[in-house]
Amino acid sequence: MVAGIKVIGTAYSIATMRVLACLYEKDLDFQFVPVDLSTGQHKMEPFLSLNPFGQVPAFEDGDLKLYESRAITRYIAEEYMNKGTDLVFKEPKKQAVESVWAEIEAHHFDPAGTILNWELSVKPRLLGQEVDRAVVDENEAKLVKVLDVYEKRLCESKYLGGDRFTLADLHHLPTADYLTDTSIKMLFESRPRVSDWLADITARPAWRKAVELRNQALKKRVDSSMQGSQTK
Image (cartoon, rainbow, N blue to C red):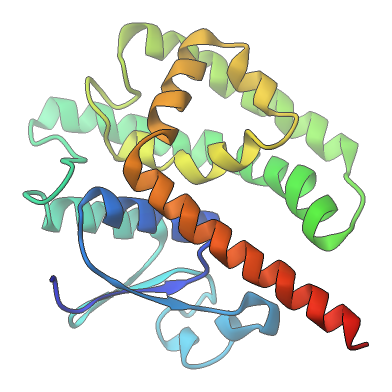
């Protein structure tokens, strides 16, 4: 067992799931410490001492403390390069290409995808709020442009970052998985290469473990909400 690895977060948060998927890919043992977002634990001490911005997850590996999910996954992939799945390239040119697609995920795919997940999943299903169709239309158009670029890229390469699964692909998993449970699913399915790529990466055993943990956390949240409503 690798001593000292700890993830402090919420298993259904997109950022936390990136880190969990990475740890499972690397076959590393770790301690998961749940944070209750509904009570604002992430906005108070002791969590703020781990991440002053009050966002999950926080990460510890011995005396190292990190936040920002993509920085955490990069650390895990490089520090534990010889364990589990190799998620980064060693060759500078391949490394540079993988980094480009990881940046595209962070700056183009995820911003639109996260807003769409909020509007189409979180608001109506968890908060009971109405969907803002103007916001959905705006961000759907942005996502269409990104997926068109991905379709072309995946005609040239099996994975976005290169000839094998890397962080550039892994970072997409939480947002993409949530979106396939909404009407946005058709945007992925209508692009054959994107559809095949997504089916490939979401079928990975490490990702299925992260999803299982997420589903358990979501069930607890729903059960807790139901109990709360019954006592009012």
